[in-house]
Image 1 (cartoon, one colour):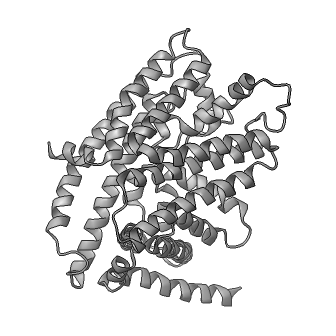
Image 2 (cartoon, one colour):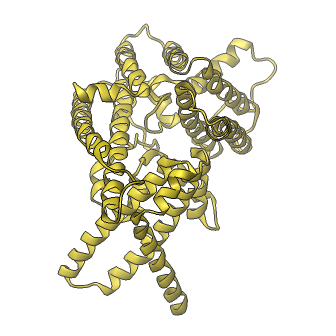
Image 3 (spheres, rainbow, N blue to C red):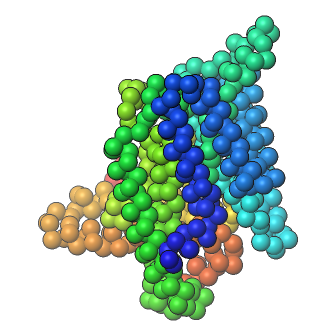
Length: 435
């Protein structure tokens, strides 16, 4: 079938699909009393190592090394001191790897290795888990043995204490994709007394599989439409708007499919169940809220719902820690985390400006538009404008290079973010006068 060939043409989807039976096996083994807690941690860790070697080859060392260093830092530093050094080391390591990609693409003018690209993607997800864990330790949500391991402790005891952390950083259901799973949730599910499978889990997996089938079928159609089009280099005026919308639609369908597949893998391993959830534990937030993303007329809401677990992680890591310009700093850090390609820098800065404009525009509209026919018209126009601006940002981020970015800037599509920029300046000036 066309959709199946298109879907598994992506190597990440292929490896995620290959890991699916092992996720089900892990969930099944958890029923057995002989499958101890240590054996569960080892199963997830060894599975992660095997998947990393299969998907990344020798580049898997670029993921293993920072994971080991993070565990050493956690066990060497006190709870209050662990976050900053861990964060700086992880982001420095990730940035150096991204600079290697820049060197290959922009200096050598060569296509990067597929395995190296998979490694960078996995490294970005590792950064999420490392920083989430270090924040949990600093905030007292996780009690680590950091700073308390004396010289009397044997090597086996130290390894046993480090095993949960290393297993969390490299466990195979979240190695190549998936929503961010907190260490609290991971530990509770691994050390749980019984299997986390239920009829609800079976139905959730079936429903997601049907969604993936529908999305991939639709992606085949959109791919043919985009392939038959002129592209940004050969379009003119309103045709550029259609090229913008259809190309961004193809990107979104791809993201939705991958997020659903990643979510399926985590749930198949038992990490999506809400059974036995402790009161202070964060739930597993799915990355794809497709209905909200496709129907919202608010750019700010789209930013919160797009890749939800990453948005929540960025809010906790950056937005809530900064007193000055928290919104701008969050989007700047997001560009850094993604690799600082020219299109990514422009796209995320543009997104920050659009979110700020969104707040002012909708605050103004809520006061001055009172009749329901005008409100309905306003919501329809705002929805269309929001979707086109998001499409513009998405093409900028995905294009990455300056040459592709220049085509986007010179296209008719630049009208949509320009309108929001003008409204931002006018409304900001009006608010300043009112104050």
